[in-house]
Length: 96
Image (cartoon, rainbow, N blue to C red; front, side):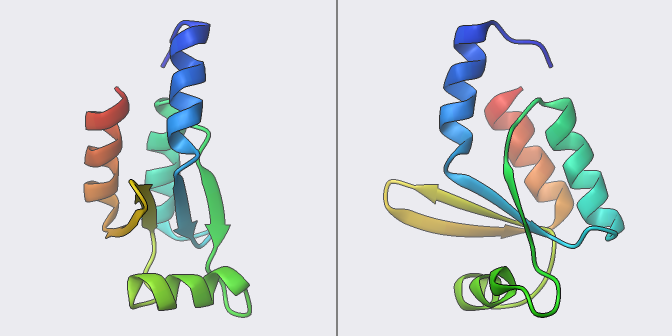
């Protein structure tokens, strides 16, 4: 997705509030990362693999170790969104 430099700068600022918890080889995570790539969104990815500190964050914050999971921080509140289709729909609605 091509944007003007100003638009991309605004998008980059907005996605600082997002993080994708994922497993590298998970097909649903791959699907989600592809959508993120197509939308040109520099979202941080965090591995939720066994032994990773991010796995504990996911469990503590989201309530379960299930990926992909998008952590959305907005107005001081944190929302944990599971399901690749929901995540992709949310990102397309917000950034496309």
